[in-house]
Structure formats: structure tokens, C-alpha cells
Length: 328
Ligand code: VTB
Ligand code: MG
Ligand code: MG
Image (cartoon, rainbow, N blue to C red):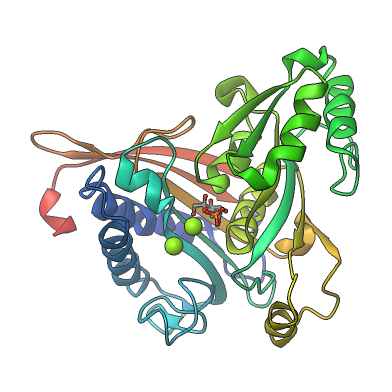
């Protein structure tokens, strides 16, 4: 098929659809273990399922953000080659179960997530924390800034949105490390949505405040999750900034090995994910944007969001899998 927006990257819309199957498989596997209190088991089955599906894709893929270093993660480790070994050469960031604790507790917003990008275009983020700031599309570039006072960011956003500050909601991970940000945001009169885990979902939520009720995401979470979220925003639009927290010589050295020469710099969305990118996420537990996997008597239903940066298409795919055997 002739694709007006196809680029040299080979990240076609067909591949975007294939990615949906990858996150669907991981989500179904994890969802079977929802609410069992066993984070590790749920994570493991998601990893296994995602890997099996990835290895059926016509790509020459390398995991650049995965489950960790090879010695600690036997599968989907950083550097693992995936795919059938023919097709476009791509880098992959993944989190087969983003929000293992949420899944184990059967609480909202755990996801199976993946992004696929042209080779060399995703930040090689070590598994450290990242300070993050994100807003959805439709605002002038630079109205919020990771180096600005959180209260000023909230006020600037309210002004740009044309609403009183009291109508802004910030999503923040519920951690003692965020006490200061929390106080600053609340001092403006804005509302806060505290989440127990899952900031990939928290950041994606900013892209559609009318549906999710979240206008801005702020705070410190995982760096790998930051690159995944940036991949999604690259497709939908919006703004994001991140800064790696390299607060020990060991972390600085680890990041340097991955190519980070300035340990204090911040990255814009287009630096976290700079090239063509495909993104897919399937709900494991019910969330603001995606429903979790539903096990019905004769079918399994999944909800997936698939995005493609080159066309900026966002598809929401509800799939009814009637051949439930395929997940076994
Ligand atoms: C962060 C966040 C993730 O876990 O990594 C968090 O980015 C871990 O934070 O979305 P703590 O070390 O404070 O527990 C998640 O919430 C879930 O993986
Ligand atoms: Mg994981
Ligand atoms: Mg995670």
C-alpha cells in the first residue's frame, strides 16, 4: 500500500497494528494474575507473553529499554535482539507490566506498554529516577518548564487554558519525596490526583484532560517509564521534559556508559524520543483511558491504544478475542 507518510524508518502502520497484538498478549497474561498479591508472577507472565509475540514480528529489533541488565533479567534484557531478524532495524522500549503493584492489588491503571523507534533515537535511560513534567497538546511551547517553580507552572497552565487555577488538576505519584511539590501545587488552589503507581498512564492522561481529568503531570518516577511516556506524547502531541536523577558517582558512571555525558541536563520530549516512533499500550486493570482485560464466558476483551508519530494517528482498539486458546 502506498503510504504518503511512510518514512525511511520502516515504521509502517501495519507494524503499529502488530504492536497492538504484542501488548494485548502481555496484558491478557498479566490480567490473569490481577489481584493475587503476587507482583513478580504477574510481571513474569507478561514478560514471557510479550517476548513470544515480539519474536513473531518482521523486524530486526533491539531492546534498549527493557527489564534490566542481562544478568538480572533473563528475558527482554537491555541489548536483547528480538523479531524475526528481517525487516526494519528498530530500537524498542518496553514495560510488559507497567504497575506491577497496581496489578497485584487490582487497582486502576496498570498497562502493558511498548514503543518502537528508528534505530538510535530513544534516550538510553538507565534504571534511575527521572524528574518529569508533562502537559497535553494545544499549548504554546514552553509555557511550563521543569526548572520553574511548580506553582508557577500551574498558574501558567491555567492562564493558557483560560480557566481559573482551581479547575486545574495535577497528577502526582503518592510518595513522601513529593511533599514539597504537593504543597506548592495545593497552595495555588489547584487539585491533585495522587496515584499509587503508574506514571506512564499518568502522563498519557494529560493528553486528554476532558476524558481523564488530568491537566499536568509532575514529579519523580522511573527514567525508563519517562522514555515510554515521551514516545506516546511524540505521537499525540503535548510537551514533556525529563531530567535523570544521577545523584551518586555510580549512577553518573552507569549513565555515562549509556552515552549520557552531561549528568545534570534536562531533556525535551523530542530528545527523549527523537525519531519516528510507534507506541502501544493495553489496559491490564481498568484505567482512565483504557479498560482492563475482560474475561467473558466465550471471549477475552482488550482495550489498546496505538499511536504513530509520522501520521500522528491515535487508534483505540477494542478487541474481542474469541479464540481464547491463542493466549495459552
Ligand atoms: C516509578 C514509576 C512507575 O513505579 O518507577 C515507580 O515511574 C517506582 O517508584 O510508573 P518508587 O521507587 O518510589 O516506588 C511505577 O509507579 C510503577 O512501575
Ligand atoms: Mg517492568
Ligand atoms: Mg514500570
